[in-house]
Image 1 (cartoon, rainbow, N blue to C red):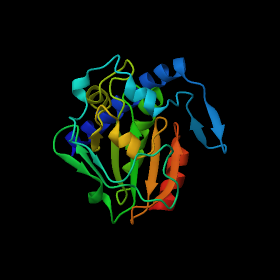
Image 2 (image 1 turned 60 degrees about the vertical axis):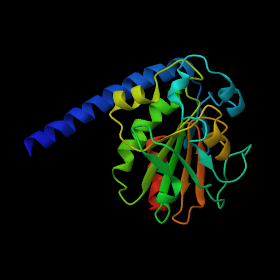
Image 3 (image 1 turned 180 degrees about the vertical axis):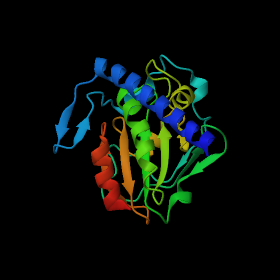
Length: 219
C-alpha cells in the first residue's frame, strides 16, 4: 500500500513540475483571449495546410507511414460541429498497435488533436489527463499531427516527460487525420456522444474548470 502511495505521489510531483515547465514555455509565446469567459484560445492557431507543408525541426521518421492512416469521407476545411459524426479512422498507435475510432463508439469520449511542439497543447494535455481520471466512463483518445513542423519535443519525448499513457494515433506526413477531422489549430478538443456525434468542439487551450463543466454534461 505504501509503495503504491509513493508511486502516486511521485507521479503527481512529476506532473506538477512538467506543468510548470510547460507554462514557462507557453508564457513566452502566447497571447490569450477569453471566449465566452471560459475558454482560453491560444494565439498559435496555424493553418493545417501550412503545418503539413513545413517539415523543419523534427524527424520525418516519426510520422505514420503512407497508407497506414485511413479516414472515412473527404477532407474538411473547418472543424466538426455539434451533431456531426466523427469520421471513422484508423492509425498507428504511438507505442505500437493501432488506434481505431470505432472502438470508442458506444460510450461518451473525448478526442484531442495536438502537436508535440505546441505550447498550448503542452499545457493542456497533462491537465486533461489528470481530469479524465475522475471520469472513468468517458473514453480518451488523441491524435498527434504536424509532427516536426516546428522545433520542439517529439511526441514520444513529450509523453515520457509528462508521464502520459493515453492512446495516441499518429498522423502521416500528409496530415490525413488532421484534414479528415477539420483541424485548423491546436489544440482541438471534440467532446463526443456515445453515438459518435459531436457534442461540443473547443479550439485553443481549455482550462480545468471548463473541462470539468463539459465532462459533467457529457458523462
